[in-house]
Structures are given as C-alpha cells and as structure tokens.
Figure (cartoon, rainbow, N blue to C red):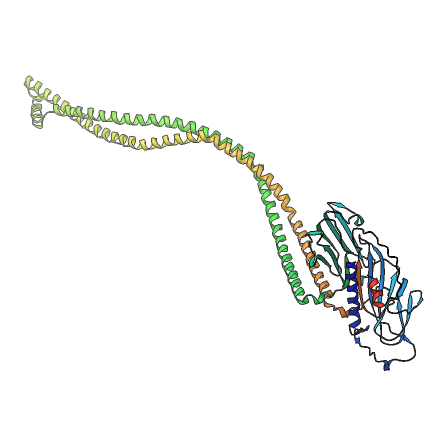
Length: 568
C-alpha cells in the first residue's frame, strides 16, 4: 500500500540520520566526550562498559487516544567491545541490529557487544501502558458523537476534537521539559477543512497536515471541522521532544515587560489606595449631608405651620390695608373740601371787611365830629345834644375800625391756614397713592398665598424624597471603602501573580537544555541518557478492503533496516 511505503521510507530516513551523525556523548557533568573508534585502543578482554544510550518511545494509541501498547527502541553507543547493561521492565526484547541475545535478570538487560560505529539497537515491549500525558480524541458526525470504527466512509460535517493533558502521576521532568506536536493528516480528496483554529497548516499534495503544538507544562484542547464525503483519514501522529523555550525568545524582554507590568500594578494599587481614602471622605460627607437633610425634613412641619401663620397674617394685613385705604380716601376728600371751603370763607371775610371799610368816615369827617364834641358842655341844649351825638358817633366809628382791623387779622390767619390745608391736601395725594398701591400689593399677595403654600408643601414632599434617596446613597456609599479594599486585595494578588510568573519564566527560560539532567523514561536505573523522544500514532480510519490471500510464503532473514521499518 502506498501509504505504508511512505512511512517505511520515512523510517529509513530516520535510521540513516541516526547512523551518519558523529557520535557525541553527554556525560553527567554536562561535558562532551568523543570516543575514538580506532581498534588499536580496544582491550582484548571483555569488560563492563559505561552505557550511553538514546531512547525512542513508540506508542500505539487507539483511535480515541487510549494507549494500546508502548515499546522502546534503545540505541546503545558501542565505542568498545564489552558488556553493556541497560534497565527496563519489558515483556519482550528483540535485537534490531543482529541476532545477539541478551542476558536478562529481572529488569536488568546485559548485552555482549562488539565495537560498532552505528551502535546497537534493540526493541523492548514495555509492560506499563502509562505515558506522561493523557490523550483524548473525539469524533462528531453532524453534531453527534460517533465511534471511529463506524466513521470510515461516512459523509457530512465531522468534528475532530483532540485533548492533551498532563498525567499528574507521571514523572514531572517530561511534563515540564517536553513539547508536543500533534499532526492530523487530512485527505483533501474526500474532506474540505471548514475550520482549524490554533493549528499550523501545511499542504503536501493531496494531504493537508494540521499541526497543533502544546508547550511544556501546559495542556490544550483543539478542534478541526471538516466537510467530508466517504471519509477516510491516515492515523494521527504525535511527536514529543525536548523543548528549550529559552532559545525562542529574549529573556530580558520578558523580564522587562513583566517588571513594567508589575510597576504599573504597584502604581495602580497606590492610586486605588488614594481612591479608598477619597471614598471614606465621600462617605463621611454623604453621611453628614444625610443627617442635615433629616433635620430639614423633621423641621418641615414647622415650615408649613409657619407658612399658615404667615397666611393668616397676610389676610389680616390685607383687611387692615383695605380699611386704611378707605379711610385715607375719605381723609383726602375732607382735606380737599376744607381747602375749598376755606377759600370761600376768606373771600367772604374780605368782602365784609371791604364793606365795613367803605362805611367808615374819612379823617376830615372824624375831625369835624371831634370838633362837635366840645359842645357837650355847652349851655345850649341843642349844642349839648349835638355834642353827645358826635361823641356817640366817634365811639361807633372807633368800634367799627376795631371790627375792621379784627376782620383783617382774621382774614390773614384764615388765608395762611387755608394755604396750609391746600399744601397738606396736595402732599397727602402722594401718601394716599402709596396706600392704594400697598392695598393692591397686599391684595395680590393674599390672592397668591395659596400658590405659595402649595409650593412649600411640594418642597417639603420633595425634601422627603431627597432624604430617601440620600439614605440609599449613604447606604451604598458606606460599602464603597470595603469594596475598594477588596479591589486593592485583588490588585495585589494580580501583582503577586505577575511577579510569580516573572520569576517562573525567568527560571524556566534561564535554564538551558544542556543544564538539565536527562531522565530515562524506561527506568530510573538508566543514568547515562543522551536523549529521549516519543513517537505516538493512532490507526488509520479507512474503508475496509477485501483481503487478498497470498499462497506463496517467503521466509527471509530480515536485516536491521527491515526490522526497524516493521516498527511503523
């Protein structure tokens, strides 16, 4: 079959590589020792030799990832003739180089070997089926899980889900230092790749190989989705080899980045601490504001009662001002009337005085009457009578003059009084206008009081709503400092995690591969190990073909390369 021939050719290439590489040995002190292969340096007697070897672990997995069998191909370096001791718990041991048989005692295998440039290869079937990793492979056809044995030849949407996890019960050395590459070969003749997130895809001819890489110390789950018709697929290949992460990146760049991130987290923690102090102050302020709001609400009834009393006062004021306006109007009218009547009185008194003045005799007439007074003492009765009449008339004239003078004086007083009344009437008009405006204002204030009272009542109701909101805000604000403290704790944990990751990566990337002592997978008694690698494979998923019986049997003695090819 062409596929099998391909893997046989690959095996030959691998063996050729092992054969032509100059032998370089790694000792426990991490120094390299080159063995001279000159026969003149070999001793004739057979003696125990220091065994240096490579281990290639082959795992045959089931289609779902379970381990069916494990065998090791051990490559012993043979720089001299002698006995080479190896250790392993095998159920079967087969020489791949020649027909040499080992001496086996418990888990100790001794080989009597002759010097060989290419070394000596033998296969041992391990009794244990435990690997340092657990593999799980799930196949899903059109949304339903299907056993791989029933998948061949099916058509539809196929999901291949591969999970790789560390086996915690195995040797930590392999988990921490070995990288895994899972290679999934997709036959493009019968399958179209819909999605293959996380893979590196390489297309060779009609095969697209999806490669998934799992770094040391990690696990992973990967999924490929195909649209297939008459599905078939070659087996999944898993190669596991040492992986030196320090060679992939500059450690200083990682350290610099982590230090920067750590410093940033430190600044964030300091800033959050200040935020905590601010939230504490905010909480105290909100609490004081809430207490003040509570007092305001408690006194709101006094505000309403005061407004009602204020309303009663406005009502009384409005009534009083209305009465005052009425009295002021009458008073204003009285002043105007007095002023008008005073003017009439002054005019009448003046006419009276003028009338009296017109009836008074002249000075000449008064002199003539005074001249007749002297006849009062006359002996002539007629003259006496004339003298008495003149005396009486002078007295009347004198009385009339006094009345005239009195009328003039009275008229002057009335004129001044009436002028004062007129001025008062004019000035009081302004006072009366102010009283009228006051009456209008108090009346408007009284009419608008109900609106003012309703506004105050709404204000008081709003104070209660505000208080309820302030109480809730206060309750929420009180938990802020604790919440910020938890945030600070979380930030500190993140910083500690960053610092720990920085230390771990620095330690991991600071160790070179040749600084680590290589551990044997087969047996802890094998101390001098040059290399260990793992090659795992699942069976092909193919449509069953009719068996063709071959009657002719040829029995031939197989050489090393043919035996090694049979391993695949």
